[in-house]
Amino acid sequence: MNMLNWQFKHYNDLSLNEFHDILALRIKVFVVEQNCPYQELDGKDKKCYHLICRNGKGDLVGTMRILPQGVAYNDIGLGRVVLAKEERGEKEGHQMIEEALAFCRDEFGDVPVYLSGQKHLEAFYNKHKFKSTGKEYLEDGIPHVEMCLKINN
Image (cartoon, rainbow, N blue to C red; front, side, top):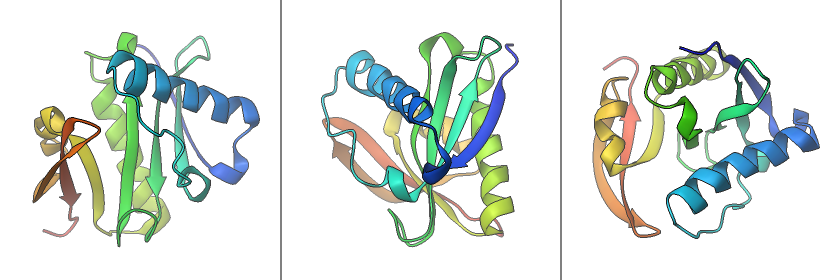
């Protein structure tokens, strides 16, 4: 397993190069790899914290945004969760979710955390105690499921 460096920054604290690298990775995976043209810039990034995950060489290999209350959900949300293809398959994805949830607890307390994940990743998120809210839908032609992690339930 590679040694990964995890960092959280609010949009206002990102450098231009960091935001460029975040967008480049999201477009590489969500648009090119998944062959899914969609509107990547939706205005929410400016209100979010961003996870920056770098490998031992300093390359950005993972990112997600942490959406404060009211940005996408009434509660906290995770979104645009992405890990470079070459980093998948070990335990990096699970480590990424654990890092994000620890950040959410530290920043916001023990509050519910929501996400809308691709349906084929539901079992992955279940391992982190996320449960389906029952809301399933197509987004850009890809089946998605809304999920929630309730800390005290």
